[in-house]
Amino acid sequence: MIFGGTANAQYQTTITVSSGTIGQMSLNTPTVGNWELSSPGSLSVGTNTFAYLAPTIRPSATGVYSFGQSAAPMDTVMILYSGRFNPAAPGSGAIVGNDDHLITIPAGIVLTGCAGSAGLCSALQTTLTGGQLYTLVVSHWASSDAASFALPMDFWCDGPANCGLAAPAPSVDALGTFVELAINRSVVQRVLANATASLINAMDYDCTTFNANGGCMSFQARASSLDKAAAAAGVYTGAYRISPNLRVGMFVDYQFDSGNATGLHTSSRTPVMGAFMGFSSEADGTGLQAKLSFAYSYAKANIAREAIFAETEPGQGASNVTGSAVALRLGWAMKVDPTMIVTPYVGIRRTEAARGGYTEDSNSLVTLPVTYNAYIQRLTTASLGLRVTDQLTDTVSYMASVAAEYDVMRPSARFSGSSGIAGLDSFSMASAGNGARLHPVGMAGLAVALDGNQRLISSVTVRGNAYSTQPAATAMAGYELKF
Image (tube, rainbow, N blue to C red; front, side, top):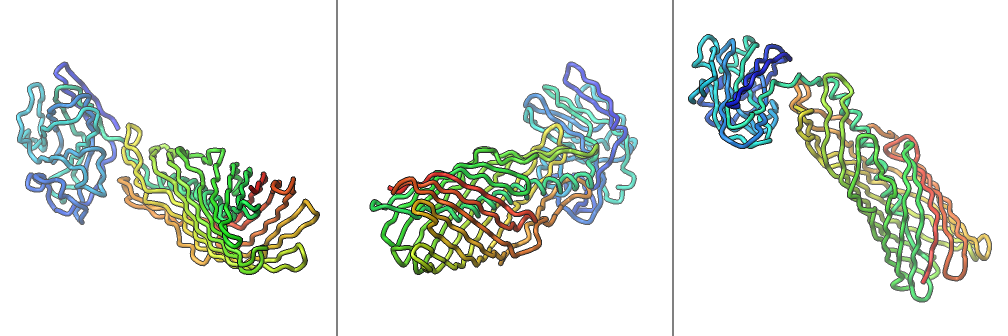
């Protein structure tokens, strides 16, 4: 893009756009004159092709400004937009438009002529807000003139302060941006997959040993790994036995590290928090076993899209990352010797992890920000397993389980959105992941009693993952107290 500029003490600015990419838009009308421009917000996408150029204005102070064209090789029309212009929504943000100038041209501005006539040069006058970005979209009266829309063009601005008139930014490469969006999709998918893994772990949190007062609590450290992404957390679990058969509890899983990935930074995070209710038909833990669990998490997220190609733009925006899970497990516990209890069980679990929709910030580095639709990973999983608990010695006990989990419902999570980038009006990408719906799960744990009310507990769980070919591994160790 080659342009020149001058300014004087009356806050008049002129620029010449002599080369660069001319954009194209499709409108719902074959002509754009003062009739259509009397309400430019009614313009919409249609079948009529128009070429356009889009210089910008960012005034340094609020006031009444005049601006327009002083030279062009053809009869042009002009529309002023608040913010950046999006050719996929030509009526959005439109403020005022003009075909042939209907205002008094300020002293000092020389109209060379458009298509040989000064009267055919567009000009506008309106109040602009200091610091706000505006876009002047210059096009032509008839759709049939698109092929003859050409450079150079001269623009001017006059007002109480510097109007910040600037030439259009270079065109943005659609293919390169699409590659960057695919990288961003992988980052978001990995973050949500890790969030889902944490929620699934939380469905197993429990506290099951009580004394006469009916209280139980534990403090554990958690270390998890999925796809080479490690996380460390502290987990508090508390429960109260309402009756010999019924207990209720809650848990808080606070992740110590940020859980961030390159391009996505979370802040204002809440822990994974939840509650559970357990039932045993017999006071000794045998017979029918039932447990219902729920968990929720929330975080704000700043998401950056890096520009890795010469003709693309970096993008950054803010959204939120949320997660929820609910699980029901039913089993039948049987004593096979005085200390060993074997429990076959079935379960159903639903998880959801989501990044909210957002639009990238518009700034000096981004002329065409990308808008992202909400991205949601949902799973409904059934499980069939066997759990064993037993005493090795008077003070040492173990627990172990194996299970098969099957993704009954796994809707395709589409990474989608839109932009004003020519050739990338919209995009939609399927998520990568583990094509297998059947996943194995294995857990082993050990407990060491310190006295009648205290014990040390530890466990390791390895679980197949719906969003990765690699399993998720979790190790936990800590202290449990019944009171």
